[in-house]
Amino acid sequence: MNSTQYYFSFYSSFDMALSGILTEAEIAAGLQSCQAADSFDYKIFFVKVGLNSKSKDQLTKVFGILDQNRSGFIEEDELKLFLQNFSASARALTDAETKTFLAAGDSDGDGKIGVDGKTAFIKRSNICL
Image (cartoon, rainbow, N blue to C red):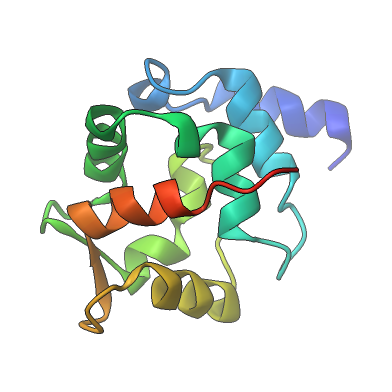
């Protein structure tokens, strides 16, 4: 897929649930930073899409979108499809990326990320690029 096709695909599948929180340009920048398998770095992604600068209320809304099964937690299978919440045409995370992401956000070792842990996790990911 060339870059023109990628951006057309991205914009045509932009998740309207995130549109009030993130801009299309922010999401495009985040997705572009991790197109290749095993290139996903949650810290870079959070900065590129601007999640690290959002309010706790906005992060709670994002958590609700990511928590596909509405369990109150983001589990490994939901993390694997994390990027697809930002664009339906985005790739799934590799097993290694998923496990690294989960380990970073799982504050109590229960194999899932709760809303409070997720918002604190995103805020801690504030890095300079």
